[in-house]
Image 1 (cartoon, rainbow, N blue to C red):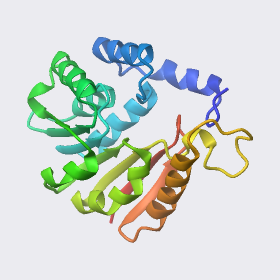
Image 2: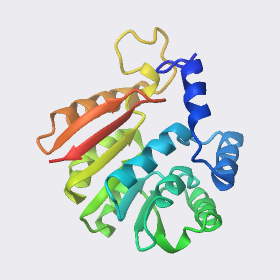
Image 3: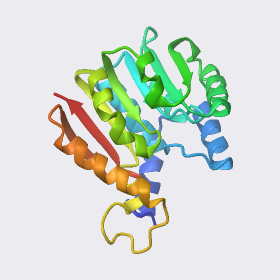
Image 4: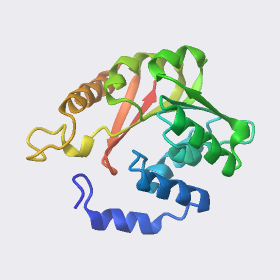
Length: 215
């Protein structure tokens, strides 16, 4: 059973998701084979819905991996849209570029290789949506910069904010993840819920997804 959502509920939600395609399925299988930290299809569908709901044309992602979440988002952009994604691992970035090309999205996607905190100066706002799924210890230090890049009404989406429940005191009884990441995420959750420029709700989907709208 999942720590956040019971397996039966996740399986039911998965059975309702009709938005995946052959390219996304192939990327997900490669990620599972190589034990990569990809979002699951239900989070992918949520990201696509948010891109459409905000009528986004300019989107930034922190943490490309091999392009799975990026395909979900970039695939919802109009042809003139721009999707920028940052990945610290050069090999993963190369694979991501190939996957974006397979999905027919290469013309609207730019993959930047390097540490996101150091590379953000290459990005100009305003942005419509930002997906933060990189190094958990960088969540807090990058927050104000990311908020500054968003337009009013823009959305900051953050993955893994419940960290398998391990940020909740006493739940689960035996944590398995890096406790320093959990401490960083707990501090970040406080920051986004108290930030004067953000209105935030946390959705207990998979590993927890925070949705913050800029005032």
